[in-house]
Length: 203
Image (cartoon, rainbow, N blue to C red; front, side, top):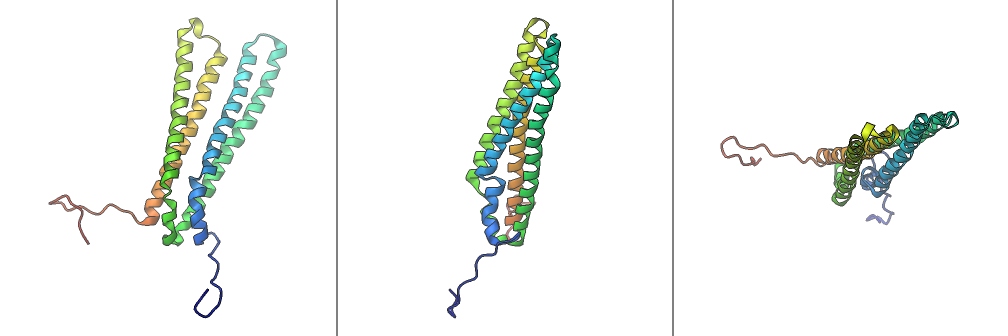
């Protein structure tokens, strides 16, 4: 209520409103986006597994089995491509929404979200480490077998590891962009240091 008895105006809701600023950390590095990252990684694994089946079908000399290779390939791409494109579009929308926070510096502090950033770092690190370990294990297993073993197993192992590693790198890149955006919006800059003492200068 205002001093004249009129109701207070509702908080602005628009591309530059304070209410949007409070929601922006949950858009960029929120739990929903983190689940989306893991969902995209899972979809990538499913898609690559189908492509691995296509490679295994080609390796099989049975002509009836080889006929399934194009089907597996199309199904795999049908899962892989939408997952990657959907993540790219979501990243672009989140970047635009968070960029609108510059219009209201008072609400930019809501973008920090340190616990969410930590969760993103840990989850992305797990994805990256798991993917790298899986790819290396597949390569090592193929190298230890006489003749390298089935090519489909190598493709599936290294490809699955690459999918998980790519998801981890995407998560870490999002965290880095988020922290850079926070420093920009909150005006955090390192104070210039004195050449003689090395201490920050006081304005």
